[in-house]
Length: 191
Image (cartoon, rainbow, N blue to C red):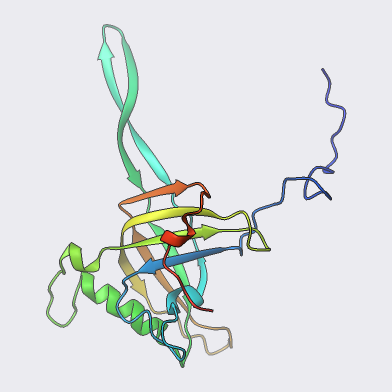
């Protein structure tokens, strides 16, 4: 049967479906980062409010080969969750850079040379995706988050653009959850 309609009339149509997920309709929340829940209004999630961008979780499964006679077959090996890169806007009156630095120092202290204990630096978090009106929530739950790198930004004397802080976060595990009223389980942020 030939395709008869090659228009884009189905995308974001009145009374229809196919509402695009926009790249600016997502939040990353990390629970338990040192100094994060402070601010002018106390209890503000500074890292979420400072977000500039982040990658969504990616998982790959190693392929193992097994041989029999003259042939090979591939089977699934171990799963690996790729690191995600997060960028934050640096603000002069909010401690975003300081919070990121404190968390990274839980992993490695440049003062003592010690590597921290995983129970102290590994955190959990969520990624929340939503429609422009806040509906159609989708969640990823993140486990074992910790910063493998912290880059406080770059000074550029020819630019007035905000400095961007970059952190690479290692992830032990990430999994998607359907929207089944689980919002009450997520960390709440004022604002």
